[in-house]
Length: 501
Image 1 (cartoon, rainbow, N blue to C red):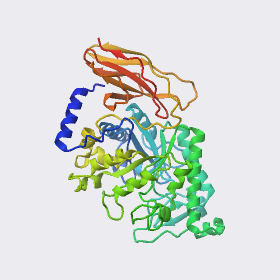
Image 2: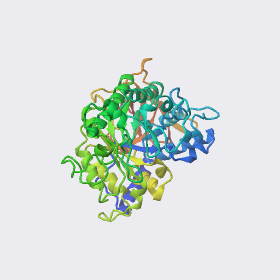
Image 3: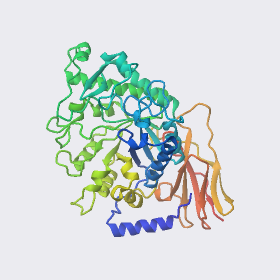
Image 4: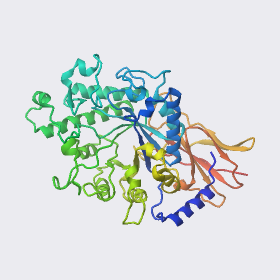
């Protein structure tokens, strides 16, 4: 992989000089740069052949990587169904056009997406929705779980949901998650903002759990009881994941408002729908208890939306992180459609990125949705590529930061025909997987007059699972070092330097 850093840096400086981009909020070395790739409502998936779907996955990942992203959050269970081979749930209609219909010829989209993401040095987070069963008036087959145990489900707004009150449902959802974590090399399990149902489009609010409340409520306030039911699932999911593979993270993407200040002095200066009161999701409790590894609050509004001002909500989430990483979710379309008049900018993208980087507990961004990035909506991808995500970033590390993986050895330059490669010896590990296993390598490039400094993100030219990387035609005196990354994104000391003679 060739990267002419001098040219790139010169171009970047020219862009800053001519575009008003801020030079005092530099791109960090560690930053989560994710994008959601959903399948629900995306008819292009089921209208493609298997080979076209594979090509589509590759194309989306290529374009996200080109835009500086280092993680894809891929939807694999939109409605109690599967975009992977499962003995627990049927194939998703969003993939093949009919619930239960397998791809033909057979392939595993989740496994393919993991392989392709990892080849590109990116993470793959498997995104599930825990409670939704149908998107609308769908006729479910007679052998569906909701037909066998109708008491464990409720219907609201013409949709079917698992009832969060039932331990059997929590066990089943965790069985699905454990099956994924056990069989797939996912970097994280990710769930979104659907807990108890949102109000219906006609304004009706959920109140369809009389039977389970009567059975399990034990005199609790109903709102507290509902929150407790969701708390139990979140805690159990966390335990399920960590018992199986401690390095796999658990992330939640909640609605952007926890509570409004008018209802709770701890709340934000906002007046919109609330996680705590409307969806019965006490997100702050989950962070405080250590049941989640990261939160991606959906701050999809414009900076100064009256009911939900992103400027104030971003600060609020930073101040209430409770020790977990915050990767803030931004809506690409609204961001590019809205001008930041306070800063005199034609859109809000730069301001939102700068705000995220200035706050200590905001460790990155997630773009909703990824197709707006890959489709370069109003130049979003170009702006990310050329300005805000022009350097590579490593995903934030987690776990014990005193632990470091083994550094690479045997680093050498190899010429093959008219190309030059850097290669090194693979850092080997045992047969059983561990959090300290080396899964990726980082290659740093330095010019003859540059000091080796692996904290400078401008010197990263490649993140790869492979032990051989093309570097094109390097100049005499350029030198390179390589580091290892383990499953928790902890980085080794740099290898010995190799210099072009």
